[in-house]
Image (cartoon, rainbow, N blue to C red):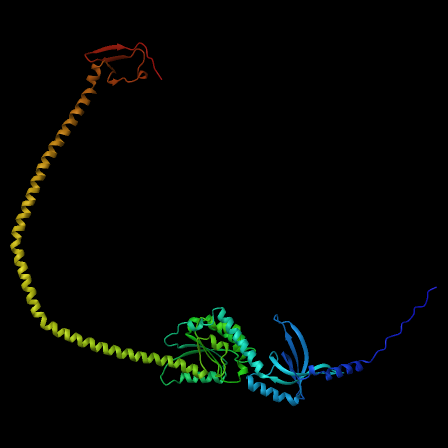
Length: 447
């Protein structure tokens, strides 16, 4: 029979609210979590209707992974002052994704849980972090050897074909165009706008897209101008972007940057071939290049005029000198050539006699050599004819018959083979002395 299972008594428990109250009292009594300066990154910032700002403070490791997170709040009674103090000191709007140093107090509410309250923000830390990030990008571009590439590109004497990267309706673009086209020197510039967003998160992709389009028509332009009007320094953060700065540093046309700020220098300013303060200053720089060229042309014109005047004056002096010199020179040349002609006339008979004597001697030598050559040739021909005569005599029929050979004929035909004869044929045998008549008794043919 099964024994009934014994039931263990439950431990003495407390309500969740009582437990949270203990945490609340514990945190509230600990000075180490009150008014502490903490370095973190802002995340998920949002402002509610009451003016309270809610956000998260996070910490990331070197690989970008979040290693700590806590909910935070800035109450409305402090938010406005902290917001504007931060913006005035850093030139940036307090927003998500910023490195900050904040003074916080940890709180725990039994209903809403853990939260830290931000009492103050140190803008100097954020300024330092911005400068650090900017310097890191510059150091990286320097290490890659591209920081000065765009600066090293050659400039046309007068850059007139201008590719402009700007926002179509921006005041800075209008100021640039007005300054460029209404210059008092009558300089002509040919411009083409490549529209881009010049502030906010779309700045980098749209500016790079505009540069891509320019690069595809690079033969049409002398340089690129990237401009925007003035504004808060926070609006210029996109120009401290590594990808954009690297693209500009490697761009095959010289780039002018005039993005409307004087106090700070962005990374884009550091890599561009020319950095100016404002869009108007960019136009003035281009105009100055033109006026410098005009001034140089004026200098060349003056130099050419002076050189021509000097050359004409020298030519006149030379002409006057030669005018007086020519008659005397002509008389001297005539006298010199008359003497030479007389000398030639006197020397001709002697030269002719000498030439005739030489040719006569040469002719006599040729005649002597010709007689010897003819006699030698005739002797060789006599010998050759005698040799041929001896051969003809040796090979004649008479000589052959005298050596014991006989010639067989049948009628008018000479017999040279046994198959030309038949038994009973009558033949005549020609001997060296006389002939004999014979009848063929037998024919023996040999293969």
